[in-house]
Amino acid sequence: MLKDIEKVYYSEETLKNIVKDLGKKISEDYKDKNLLLVSVLKGSIMFMADLMREITVPCEIDFMCVSSYNDGTKSSGVVKIIKDLDINLDGKDVLIVEDILDSGRTLGYLKSILMTRNPKSFRICTLLDKPSRRAVPDLWADYSGAEVPDEFVVGYGLDYDEKYRNLPYIGILKREVYSDKCE
Ligand code: IMP
Ligand code: MG
Image 1 (tube, rainbow, N blue to C red):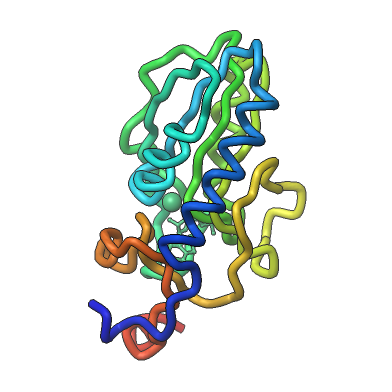
Image 2 (image 1 turned 45 degrees about the vertical axis):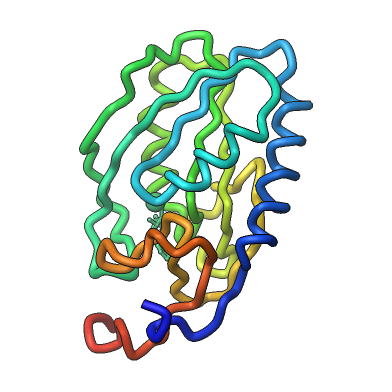
Protein backbone atom coordinates (compact mmCIF):
# COMPACT_ATOMS: atom_id res chain seq x y z
CA MET A 1 0.00 0.00 0.00
CA LEU A 2 2.80 2.39 0.93
CA LYS A 3 4.24 2.31 -2.57
CA ASP A 4 0.99 3.84 -3.91
CA ILE A 5 1.23 6.92 -1.66
CA GLU A 6 2.85 10.03 -3.17
CA LYS A 7 3.23 11.71 0.21
CA VAL A 8 1.78 11.71 3.69
CA TYR A 9 -0.34 14.86 3.88
CA TYR A 10 -1.64 14.66 7.45
CA SER A 11 0.20 12.39 9.87
CA GLU A 12 -1.46 10.37 12.61
CA GLU A 13 -0.23 12.93 15.15
CA THR A 14 -1.61 15.89 13.18
CA LEU A 15 -4.98 14.19 12.70
CA LYS A 16 -5.18 13.57 16.42
CA ASN A 17 -4.74 17.28 17.12
CA ILE A 18 -7.22 18.30 14.41
CA VAL A 19 -9.88 15.96 15.82
CA LYS A 20 -9.19 17.08 19.38
CA ASP A 21 -9.79 20.74 18.41
CA LEU A 22 -13.02 19.88 16.58
CA GLY A 23 -14.27 17.88 19.57
CA LYS A 24 -13.58 20.80 21.88
CA LYS A 25 -15.47 23.30 19.70
CA ILE A 26 -18.42 20.94 19.24
CA SER A 27 -18.59 20.23 22.99
CA GLU A 28 -18.78 23.97 23.70
CA ASP A 29 -21.44 24.61 21.03
CA TYR A 30 -23.69 21.67 21.94
CA LYS A 31 -23.98 22.18 25.70
CA ASP A 32 -27.67 21.72 26.63
CA LYS A 33 -28.62 20.52 23.13
CA ASN A 34 -29.92 17.24 21.75
CA LEU A 35 -26.79 16.32 19.80
CA LEU A 36 -27.13 13.50 17.30
CA LEU A 37 -23.95 12.62 15.41
CA VAL A 38 -24.73 11.14 11.99
CA SER A 39 -21.78 9.32 10.48
CA VAL A 40 -21.80 9.00 6.72
CA LEU A 41 -20.43 5.53 5.98
CA LYS A 42 -18.03 4.22 5.11
CA GLY A 43 -15.45 7.00 4.79
CA SER A 44 -16.13 8.72 8.13
CA ILE A 45 -15.73 5.61 10.30
CA MET A 46 -12.30 6.44 11.81
CA PHE A 47 -13.08 10.14 12.12
CA MET A 48 -16.40 9.40 13.84
CA ALA A 49 -14.82 6.94 16.28
CA ASP A 50 -12.10 9.42 17.26
CA LEU A 51 -14.32 12.53 17.24
CA MET A 52 -16.98 11.08 19.53
CA ARG A 53 -14.27 10.30 22.10
CA GLU A 54 -13.30 13.98 22.09
CA ILE A 55 -16.90 15.15 22.65
CA THR A 56 -17.61 15.70 26.31
CA VAL A 57 -21.36 16.50 26.16
CA PRO A 58 -24.10 13.85 25.93
CA CYS A 59 -24.81 12.70 22.39
CA GLU A 60 -26.47 9.97 20.38
CA ILE A 61 -25.00 8.41 17.25
CA ASP A 62 -26.47 6.98 14.08
CA PHE A 63 -25.19 5.87 10.71
CA MET A 64 -26.24 6.45 7.17
CA CYS A 65 -24.75 4.77 4.14
CA VAL A 66 -25.04 6.44 0.78
CA SER A 67 -23.39 5.55 -2.46
CA SER A 68 -22.74 8.16 -5.08
CA TYR A 69 -22.47 6.80 -8.55
CA ASN A 70 -19.01 7.68 -9.73
CA ASP A 71 -15.99 6.63 -11.72
CA GLY A 72 -13.88 5.95 -8.66
CA THR A 73 -12.51 9.45 -8.05
CA LYS A 74 -15.38 11.84 -8.86
CA SER A 75 -18.97 11.83 -7.62
CA SER A 76 -21.81 12.28 -10.09
CA GLY A 77 -24.37 13.85 -7.75
CA VAL A 78 -26.72 10.90 -8.09
CA VAL A 79 -26.90 9.42 -4.62
CA LYS A 80 -28.52 6.19 -3.49
CA ILE A 81 -29.40 5.48 0.17
CA ILE A 82 -27.96 2.08 1.08
CA LYS A 83 -28.75 2.35 4.80
CA ASP A 84 -31.05 4.93 6.32
CA LEU A 85 -31.03 6.30 9.88
CA ASP A 86 -32.73 4.39 12.72
CA ILE A 87 -33.34 7.46 14.89
CA ASN A 88 -36.20 9.90 14.30
CA LEU A 89 -34.75 13.38 13.72
CA ASP A 90 -37.66 15.30 15.21
CA GLY A 91 -36.20 17.73 17.82
CA LYS A 92 -32.62 16.56 17.35
CA ASP A 93 -29.60 18.79 16.80
CA VAL A 94 -28.16 16.87 13.91
CA LEU A 95 -24.45 17.05 13.18
CA ILE A 96 -23.37 15.25 10.03
CA VAL A 97 -19.91 13.69 10.34
CA GLU A 98 -18.32 13.38 6.91
CA ASP A 99 -14.87 12.41 5.72
CA ILE A 100 -14.41 14.90 2.91
CA LEU A 101 -16.38 17.67 1.26
CA ASP A 102 -15.47 17.69 -2.41
CA SER A 103 -18.03 18.88 -4.98
CA GLY A 104 -20.63 19.01 -2.18
CA ARG A 105 -23.15 17.03 -4.21
CA THR A 106 -23.39 14.10 -1.80
CA LEU A 107 -23.98 16.30 1.25
CA GLY A 108 -26.24 18.66 -0.70
CA TYR A 109 -28.48 15.72 -1.51
CA LEU A 110 -28.31 14.30 2.04
CA LYS A 111 -29.14 17.69 3.51
CA SER A 112 -32.22 18.06 1.32
CA ILE A 113 -33.52 14.66 2.46
CA LEU A 114 -32.77 15.10 6.16
CA MET A 115 -34.20 18.63 6.36
CA THR A 116 -37.64 17.21 5.47
CA ARG A 117 -37.49 15.17 8.72
CA ASN A 118 -37.79 18.18 10.96
CA PRO A 119 -34.49 18.27 12.92
CA LYS A 120 -34.18 21.09 15.46
CA SER A 121 -30.91 22.11 13.82
CA PHE A 122 -28.67 20.79 11.08
CA ARG A 123 -24.92 21.29 10.78
CA ILE A 124 -22.05 19.67 8.94
CA CYS A 125 -18.68 18.60 10.34
CA THR A 126 -16.14 17.44 7.79
CA LEU A 127 -12.63 16.27 8.50
CA LEU A 128 -11.32 17.46 5.13
CA ASP A 129 -12.46 20.13 2.71
CA LYS A 130 -11.49 20.66 -0.93
CA PRO A 131 -13.00 24.14 -1.37
CA SER A 132 -11.55 24.60 -4.86
CA ARG A 133 -13.74 21.77 -6.14
CA ARG A 134 -17.11 22.93 -4.80
CA ALA A 135 -19.92 22.62 -7.36
CA VAL A 136 -22.80 23.29 -4.96
CA PRO A 137 -22.10 26.95 -4.07
CA ASP A 138 -24.23 27.34 -0.93
CA LEU A 139 -22.93 24.21 0.76
CA TRP A 140 -20.28 24.74 3.41
CA ALA A 141 -19.08 22.94 6.52
CA ASP A 142 -19.88 24.45 9.91
CA TYR A 143 -16.86 22.57 11.28
CA SER A 144 -13.94 21.73 9.04
CA GLY A 145 -10.77 19.98 10.20
CA ALA A 146 -8.36 20.84 7.41
CA GLU A 147 -8.16 21.71 3.75
CA VAL A 148 -6.63 19.51 1.08
CA PRO A 149 -5.57 20.51 -2.43
CA ASP A 150 -7.23 19.19 -5.57
CA GLU A 151 -5.59 15.78 -5.28
CA PHE A 152 -7.05 12.38 -4.52
CA VAL A 153 -6.37 11.50 -0.89
CA VAL A 154 -6.77 8.18 0.90
CA GLY A 155 -6.41 6.73 4.39
CA TYR A 156 -8.02 7.31 7.80
CA GLY A 157 -11.27 5.91 6.37
CA LEU A 158 -11.01 7.36 2.88
CA ASP A 159 -10.74 4.89 0.03
CA TYR A 160 -9.90 4.45 -3.58
CA ASP A 161 -11.78 1.47 -4.99
CA GLU A 162 -12.56 0.38 -1.38
CA LYS A 163 -8.88 0.14 -0.47
CA TYR A 164 -6.46 2.18 1.70
CA ARG A 165 -9.13 2.93 4.36
CA ASN A 166 -6.97 1.29 7.04
CA LEU A 167 -3.99 3.64 6.65
CA PRO A 168 -3.71 5.61 9.92
CA TYR A 169 -2.77 8.85 8.09
CA ILE A 170 -4.08 10.87 5.12
CA GLY A 171 -1.89 10.47 2.05
CA ILE A 172 -2.00 11.67 -1.54
CA LEU A 173 -2.56 8.74 -3.87
CA LYS A 174 -0.14 8.50 -6.81
CA ARG A 175 -1.91 9.53 -9.99
CA GLU A 176 -0.64 6.45 -11.81
CA VAL A 177 -2.80 4.31 -9.51
CA TYR A 178 -6.02 5.79 -10.88
CA SER A 179 -5.15 7.80 -14.01
CA ASP A 180 -5.84 4.89 -16.35
CA LYS A 181 -9.35 4.61 -14.88
CA CYS A 182 -10.62 8.19 -15.12
CA GLU A 183 -10.52 11.38 -17.17
P1 IMP B 1 -18.78 15.09 -3.23
O1 IMP B 1 -20.19 14.63 -3.43
O2 IMP B 1 -18.10 15.41 -4.54
O3 IMP B 1 -18.62 16.19 -2.22
O4 IMP B 1 -17.97 13.84 -2.76
C1 IMP B 1 -18.01 13.40 -1.48
C2 IMP B 1 -17.57 11.98 -1.37
O5 IMP B 1 -16.66 11.60 -2.43
C3 IMP B 1 -16.79 11.83 -0.10
O6 IMP B 1 -17.64 11.53 0.98
C4 IMP B 1 -15.84 10.72 -0.43
O7 IMP B 1 -16.44 9.48 -0.18
C5 IMP B 1 -15.57 10.87 -1.90
N1 IMP B 1 -14.34 11.63 -2.16
C6 IMP B 1 -14.20 12.88 -2.63
N2 IMP B 1 -12.91 13.24 -2.73
C7 IMP B 1 -12.20 12.19 -2.27
C8 IMP B 1 -10.78 11.94 -2.10
O8 IMP B 1 -9.88 12.76 -2.38
N3 IMP B 1 -10.47 10.72 -1.60
C9 IMP B 1 -11.38 9.76 -1.26
N4 IMP B 1 -12.70 9.96 -1.40
C10 IMP B 1 -13.10 11.15 -1.90
MG1 MG C 1 -17.85 9.72 2.10
